[in-house]
Image (cartoon, rainbow, N blue to C red; front, side, top):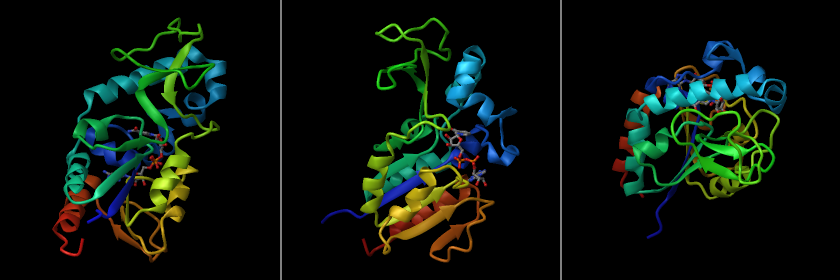
Length: 232
Ligand code: NAD
């Protein structure tokens, strides 16, 4: 029998307990920086050395972090369901926890891309990407992340995946960054929707089952309930 499909949409909150800061919890600052000073093409053109260094610091934090109980619990869903993780995060904690199908809407910090030809991407060896490191066509390498104002190439694939979802689980996102936040409107009307976030403000959507808890507590419990269901 065909397995039911669960799509999991994650944001910075799922990695908070792994020690990686979210930014809207810190008054719109990301590790003390205004995001528009570090996460836009304009910032890169203005001061590439500073932007490169900012992401080198973020990469160091990611490499030092470990998947938490929420990342790990999601892997258990795969015994019973077809699972797709659609993440806004640029860390690799879902992969390191063992999730099989992870789509990074906003790129991944462990890779670089050509500043001229974004489709040319490379693994970064170690924490630092340096000025002067070039793609095969001779252009500077930058972090493989989607900055504000840039296209989100993976959104079409994510929409296709969401359109066939039986269950959508949203974890640790303020749902303020588009087009990612719009994915919630692309699941079928019959899909069950869960939201795990200790401080969410979306209670007014009565269609959503809100689990107002930190991901490390709420996600393992929700996963247990879904795995123990007998109607799938
Ligand atoms: P956000 O900072 O806008 O919102 C974080 C959400 O997580 C909030 O709703 C908050 O209540 C919730 N949260 C905080 N602690 C939590 C916990 N312990 N458990 C569950 N939820 C918790 O984050 P966003 O919506 O993902 O948008 C931010 C953008 O910043 C993303 O596009 C992402 O690329 C980038 N970002 C990524 C990382 C990362 O990769 N780890 C970290 C910071 C920012």
